[in-house]
Length: 141
Image 1 (cartoon, one colour):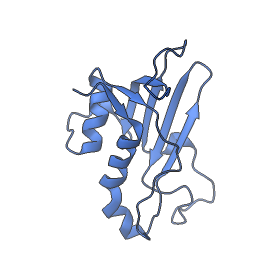
Image 2 (cartoon, rainbow, N blue to C red; image 1 turned 135 degrees about the vertical axis):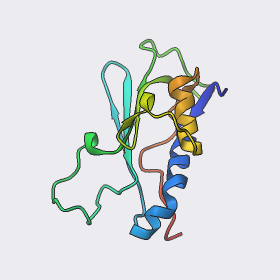
Image 3 (cartoon, rainbow, N blue to C red; image 1 turned 30 degrees about the horizontal axis):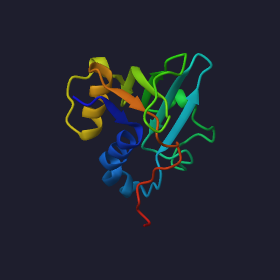
């Protein structure tokens, strides 16, 4: 089992998993949002649909709770758990895939789902080694 999983690898696997279906919609980027909390946690909300999806019937912007996927990470409050580059390494204490809690999903077929399962069920930790706006589907590359 992996000791530390890269958030960048996890998000790249998510993008790769959705690349074909998003090309049909001509979506360039997924909607990925990082939300830091005072207690030392980070919540990552994400969806294959872009933030500015014009096909939505409402003019209101979606809030992060309406996105279909989420990863909730807690970090050591003393900041002691870091990788060799000084980045915080945390544990995933809750996660959703397609609006389903990971604990209720027992079919892990894709690379993205397997990485998330290793974080949720295994002893793997996650390193936050990317920014929320680094990912795209590459349809115009």
